[in-house]
Image (cartoon, rainbow, N blue to C red):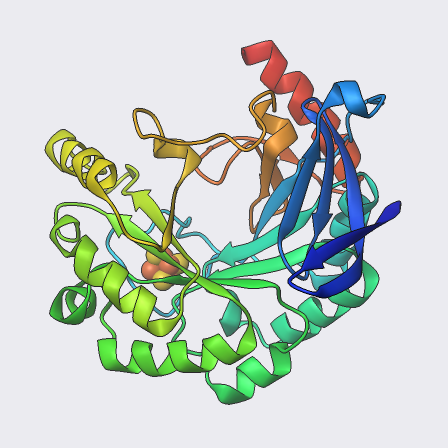
Amino acid sequence: MRHVHLKVGFWQDISVIPLKIRQTSSGVHLFDRRTGLNILLEPKSTGLRAPSLAPRQISVALSNACDLRCSYCYAPKTSGRLRLDDVVGWLADLDQAGCLGVGFGGGEPTLLRDFPHLCQRLAAETQLAITFTTHGHHLDAALCSRLQDTVHFVRISMDGVGETYERLRGRSFSALLDRLADVRTLAPFGINYVVNDDTIGELDAAVAVAVDAGAREFLLLPEQPTSARSGIDSETMASLHAWVNAYQGSLALTVSAAAADGLPVTAPLPREEPLEAYAHIDANGTLKRSSYDDSGVAIGDGTIMQALAALREMSEGTA
Ligand code: SF4
């Protein structure tokens, strides 16, 4: 693990913060998981070495289980659950190889009894930024207190507002708003918003709710096709483009990589290759290029770095 200490001035306060260093094909990436601060030093100013072997970000589906039944859910409906010790071992290796952050999902990670323990171990044993995606309904004050100081960002799924949310998610919208008040005490959080013909008309209202609740980011997730549904239609996608182009709000908008085409997206590291930016481990221990992929490389008894090398080879073979 390598760190650099950098002096940063905020108003009259001067802080010394430890930054994790990652070599990328775009330059040297410095990162602080506590604040989310990212600094990219251009290659010509750094004497760039070989890029770090791990992806910048890894997502992990700890289990496929969920207590909601959203019709557009793309999580596999088969059983699958990772062992905590395997997850810690894989993530410790990725951390050492230059990975900056892990995002847990599933399924619903807060259903797992040992989820707070997993986050505690990772916060203590690695330098990874720890985030997770959740429907939020189990994040009461007690669970938030167990996760305190171990999680760096929370992603709350909220598609539509009021009656639309309740119809799509089958849970009370006012209960979700109560949970957001608890989440706000835990860590900075963002809203994940599935965009489809049910939810497109409520984007302004949803952003207003997110701002009121104290969210830092609003992630647009155009609905992806599954075996049961065809995904966002072209008319709704065109409306989304128009809405994004007209957006004047102060809350930061982001969009899933799978659906960024045609939207005014700024790539943070434009020279990054797909597996340099991101990879996914599913709930059966298969490493994939993304959570939407059907195939990948089973990690099995090998190491995560061996699986990553095999996946890179496989991707180059099919590129
Ligand atoms: S809350 Fe998430 S994981 Fe659960 S059913 Fe809905 S979309 Fe799927």
